[in-house]
Amino acid sequence: MQTPEIKKLLYTPNTVKPPHAIKQKPLSLCIRVCGWLIIAFLPIYCLLMMEYIHYANKARFATFFIERTPVVLFDLAVLYLIWVCVLCLCKKGWIAVLVFGGGCGILSYVNYLKYAMTGDYFYPWDLIEQAGNVG
Image 1 (cartoon, rainbow, N blue to C red):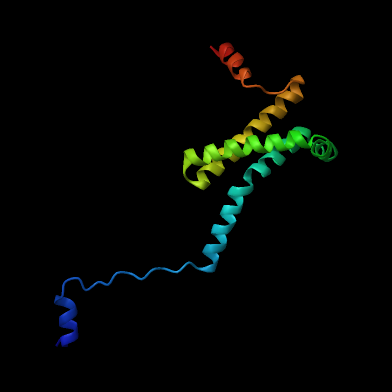
Image 2 (image 1 turned 45 degrees about the vertical axis):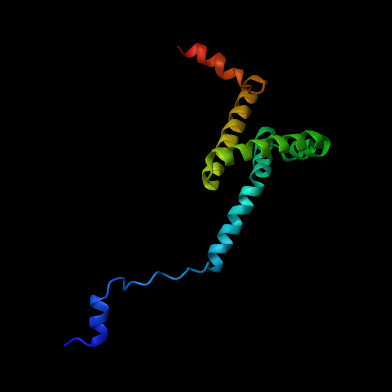
């Protein structure tokens, strides 16, 4: 036998209540804050990574930052400008981090290899020169 409460639940349309708003848990909030910090400081990390890969020496790396502070500040301004453009184009922070961080890592490694082999830096027109030699 069914009780009147069960009958009412079984035969009443729209018996499902909308879910309550889920409160953010502290861990989720912590992860979100860490993500925003990564997004904010990624260009600084990329600049440090690129210069350290290029110099491959802690003393020369530190000397560069001390003696050429205006150049470092200009580099940071350019990196932040590019970072904001990539972030606006991707519209997702994690995709922009992968694109920007991966691009900076690859370009700095290519620059290091070219400088180690030829003594000259990597320039965009190097790609055009090499594209003509491939075909």
